[in-house]
Length: 494
Image (cartoon, rainbow, N blue to C red; front, side, top):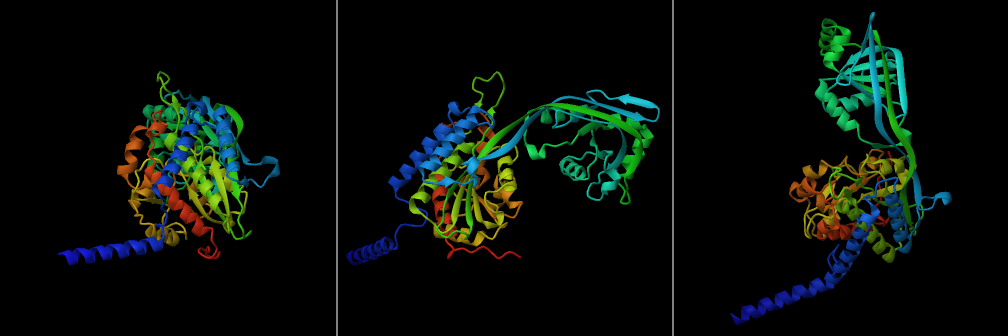
C-alpha cells in the first residue's frame, strides 16, 4: 500500500510538471486577472447603463454621452480613428429619420359608386410627411409577387391578399416594381386594430431607405362591399388557381397618409488598431451601443430602459477586449472596433456601415459581434450564431476545442442569426459570427428574455459576468489567430 501510494504521488507530480511546462491553458488567465477584468466590465456597464445615459436612445443626449464615452475609451487604449474620414474622426454619421403615423384616408371609386372607408375598415401608412395617390387603377395580384411583371403594376395601386408571416416579404417584392401604392386585404376590424398598435408607434429608419412606400390595409368585407360580393368572391377563388394572372379592376382609389417625421444624424463609433502588415486584411469587432430610452407604461415609476445586458455588456466586453489587444499588439492585420447605432430599430447602424464602409468589404477577413453577453455563469457552453455560414468555422472550432469549450444547442443559436448586427454583414458576403455563452440554450437565455429583456429591469445589478469573461478570453485568442496571416488565410474569391 505504501509503495502504491508513493507511485501514485510520483505520477501526479510528473503530470503537474508537464502541465507547468505546457504553460497556461488557451483562453484562460489566473484568478486575479479574471477579477481585474470583471472589475473593468462592471465599471463600464455601470456607466453605460446608468440613468445619466437615459437608455442610450439614438438622437438624444444619452447618445452623445454614450458616443463620447466609447470614443474616449478607444483613444485611451491607443487606437486611432477608424472612419478614414479626417472631417469626421471617430464618428461615422448615420442619417436617420423618426416617423410616426398621424392621419390616413381611403376612398374607392367602383363604377358610378364612391366608397369612403371608415377607420375600422381601412388604414394607410407612409414614412413621408404626406403621401397621396388619386385616380390610379387597381390591379389585383392575389398572392403573387415574384411572378408579377413590373409593367403590369408600375404606377398603379396593387391589391394583394394578406397572409400571416408572408405579407411583409410579398409587399417588399412588389414595391420593387414601383407601384403607386399597395393595398393588403386583411380579415376584419380586429386586424386593423392590431396594425394600428404595431405601426402606430414611432419608428426609426435609415434616411436612405425611408422613401415613398404608401401602404394601405383594407378589410375583406370592405373590399367585398366596394367590388361587389360576387365579383370579389370570383377574384379570391381565381387567386388560388395555378394559372392565375393579375386582373385590372374597374375601379380607382384615393389613398392619403401623413406622418410626423424628423430627420437627424446619429453615429457609429469607429476605432482602428493598425496592423504591422498593411493590406493583409481587416478584423472587425462590432457591438451596438443603443437601447430604447424609455419603455413600459406611462404610470410606471421607473421608465428608463437602461439596457445593462442589452447591450452595455456587449460594449463593455468589446472595450476590454480592445484594451487587452492594444496592450499586447501589434498584430499583422488591422483591427477595427465598431460601436453601432440603432440596432434595436433593425440593425440600422450595421447596415449603414455596409453602405459606407471605412475599408473595402472584401478586405474584412473576419467579423465578431458582441451583444447581450452578461447572462451565463462561468464554464457555460458556447452558442455559435452563424455556424456553417462562413469559412471561419474550422479555426473557431479548433480554438474552442483547445480551450476546452463546448458548443451549446446549435438549433437554438441559429434562431438568432438574423436578429443581430452580424446578419447585415453576412448578407453582403462579409464573414461574420456571433459567439456567446448567453446564446447556448433556452435554459440560459430564456429567463432573461421572459423578464428583463427590453424592460426597465435590465439593470447592472442583474448582470452575470462569468460567461462574459469566458467569451472575452475566447475572442482574444480568436482575434490573435485570425489577425495572424500564417494562421489564417481567407479563401480565394471565386
